[in-house]
Length: 238
Figure 1 (cartoon, rainbow, N blue to C red):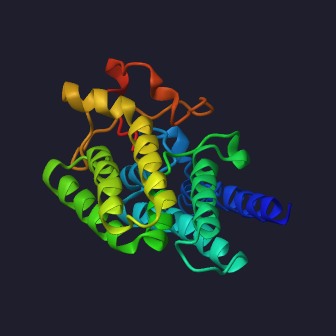
Figure 2: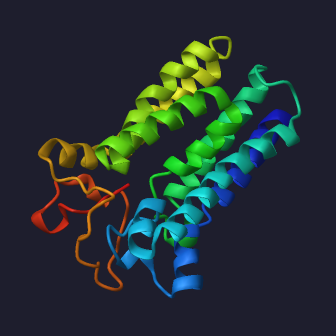
């Protein structure tokens, strides 16, 4: 019973910390702008960068990543056992998944949010720093070459479980988590994949984005489940 309560406590803490919508807060506090009504409408660092500039985008990325890192660190403090022990790794997994779910479906803003890539990256940095480094380098190289954050995220999602299996083969729970993370990230980018295949995906060098979303419109990061229309073919969705 104590173990179950501990796990639920870690999950609850991680969910509500992960749910803090830094993209929305920074936009409103410092720029008097609701980024949900501009660009892709996504509450992520890429859309913030395009709408508000690279400094704001970098700040959002770091803050979103910090959410995932803080949640995994919290799990280690609550149950300070050695990494690799089944209970400890399960708490880490619970913290990471809960923080990403909080980011993607925040109760503070009507259960909407971003795709959780930055939040997952922060948790991964604490969980598997070596695999994280290889994953980050993959992301950076792909974005540098193709100028598409979405493609970089997808490539990183593919590389991460491969590196984790090679580096953390003695931690089956973490290996399973890496596969789950890859599946979630790729699923969340399913419409981006369609746009990439059609040559319609936005690049970070694009000067012209999709028209601003009308004020008050219901914008959901996962509402792109349907095929993109001509009006949204330039949206990033990252």
